[in-house]
Amino acid sequence: MDKLKKEVRLAVNIDHFATLRQARRSTEPDPVFVALLAEQAGAMGIVTHLRGDRRHIQERDLRLLREVIKTKLNLEMAATEEMKKIALRIKPDVVSLVPERPEELTTEGGLDVKRQLKQLIPFIQVLKKAKIRVSIFVDPLNDQIKACRQAGVDLIEINTGRYAELKPESARKKALEAIKEAAILAEELGLEVHAGHGLDYYNVKPIVAIPQIEELSIGFAIVARSAIVGVEKAVRDMVCLLKRD
Image 1 (cartoon, one colour):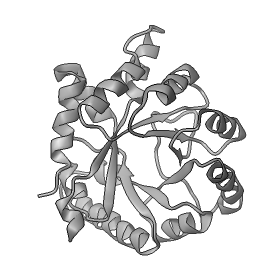
Image 2 (cartoon, rainbow, N blue to C red; image 1 turned 90 degrees about the horizontal axis):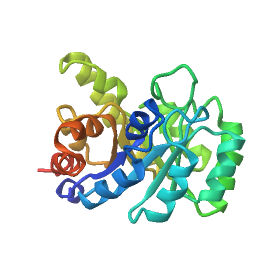
Image 3 (cartoon, rainbow, N blue to C red; image 1 turned 180 degrees about the vertical axis):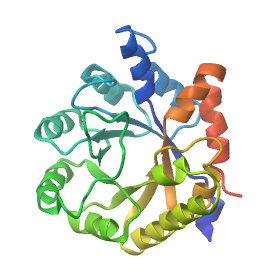
Image 4 (cartoon, one colour; image 1 turned 45 degrees about the vertical axis):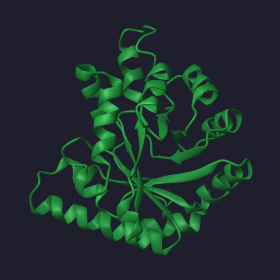
């Protein structure tokens, strides 16, 4: 397949750089500067989650990112009226709808699109009318993938969290198969397939090998390695892993 000859695009999630900054209510590290370094090192997109509690990324960051990003700005957000107004004002290239709970450490699962379909359809239509592409972060479940198509998006991000948290044994293989099946179904339905959550330098290659997946969103692993080797090398190391043999 031609797709197997291509590299999977890397979108770098910069949220945890902002988490470090907010821990001391400081001005550094500046996630906007990090985003520029990531682009220079080969990232093809920047991902950031503006949460309701503003625990890491702030609206100031989002405004500046919109001005300086040269690749693609992907705004993760909950499907709330507050976030919709912000998205319509900032105009990111992509809005990724994700579930959000105040008590969670990070996003814990995919959006239940099937249950929220009636509410999501008009929400998505407003964003699309504003020329903003809409994605949904979704678990690798067939009914949820089909609901994404019904919701009116043409792009999804498959949650790889379950796969990533398991040891490389039979359970992980089963989780990987679920991702493969979801990716195949999504492509058959005409959806562009991205994936992410929990991926790192050690578990990413089996995901890269799935031909339907065009882009991966990776954050914490790159942030952690950046603390040792610097942002640009951490991004370059991941870009190399995203090359298909």
